[in-house]
Image 1: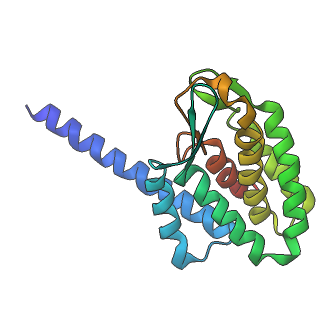
Image 2: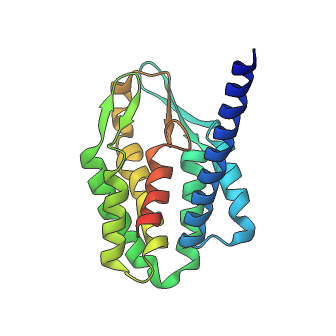
Length: 195
């Protein structure tokens, strides 16, 4: 009787430790890319909770597949990228160039998986974004890496493949994927950490 209780307490403490560790890493990444500390918690909370929310945009194809946008996996990264783009005037051209390069790389890596969606190897897009950002703006690489990584992944994987929605064969396809841990979000955060 005591063993299951101790195991439950241990698993709960382990889950809390993982959550605190994950939040600290995300907080560090957001600071590095230029999110003001007073907004960091809000961005993290909306990203995590928003990963469960898909907003329908339109239907397409014969089977009438609904195309939606995921709040945590796409909408938050788009808004944060737009914020960085507008705030960092000296990086705007480099952000556009970096986004274009990462979009081409991600599109080359993307494959349609029937019934699932668009699949991209998890670590290659953030590595590409980090390399591009270091080459384009060594001293200001983290915000450039986030912007080019998240927008490049969104454009290269999801938007560029919209004409292939019928090949997926799913009733709902979400831009930004399955949520927060989709390639768009991860690419931006990991690229920002690596740069």
